[in-house]
Image (tube, rainbow, N blue to C red; front, top):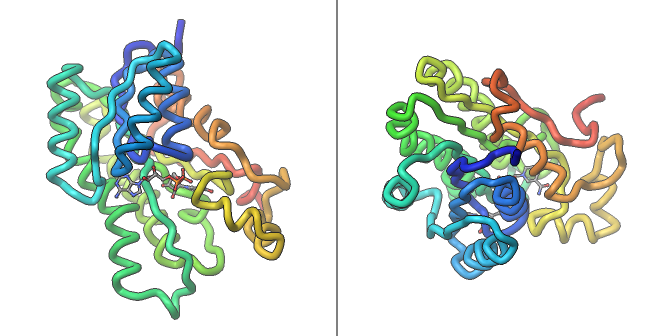
Length: 250
Ligand SMILES: NC(=O)c1ccc[n+]([C@@H]2O[C@H](COP(=O)([O-])OP(=O)(O)OC[C@H]3O[C@@H](n4cnc5c(N)ncnc54)[C@H](O)[C@@H]3O)[C@@H](O)[C@H]2O)c1
């Protein structure tokens, strides 16, 4: 039996990086995945690759900062699939600047994409999950939603907001049987970190206290997301699942 057989799952930021990896793994485990992203070309490529491998997927153009896009995307899923079982709020951006150089625009943009999107996306799916009598929301935060690091104050504040918003939702949505959890990846090799990892002057500082002394591949986070998306995690609610090679352990 596949682990998320027939579940209807929306993955934001599914065009590349971890979102692509989550989409591919979930589809390989039987889910119908709606890959949502602003990047149409790469998003469609993710869907094509899933379908070529025998999985089920559709692309949705979704800018997670736009409520109108959310409503259209969720309507399309309901029209096609009749329900939405799992929402994975994965899309995110990183603006690398110390607090003294961070502009109001940097702050607002970061919060729009990383935090406000999670709020408006959650609100868009709630009525359908309530109607179904169950639901599952997975919010991608970061180790930087748990601890600080140099040069990314807006990012860290936005990921901290996602962490606590997840817990608020866990409280508010439990009566509707909607589970809500956050995932906290450590240093993962994607476009977001590639240049920093390739720079010998930055790599050791970025890896920081990662006890396993290496960055992870996206699939290593996808396995944790798969667990949360599946019924194997049926009693996991309001939790923060840290996938960081030990970064925050000491
Ligand atoms: N890479 C890491 O080390 C790391 C660590 C912890 C947490 N994270 C978080 O994991 C998530 C995925 O990160 P990644 O490393 O795969 O990033 P990535 O840059 O490789 O991919 C991000 C995806 O989000 C999409 N996206 C960006 N803005 C969007 C918007 N407004 N609307 C829709 N889609 C949008 C991009 O098009 C892209 O497909 C992010 O939330 C990130 O903050 C990453």
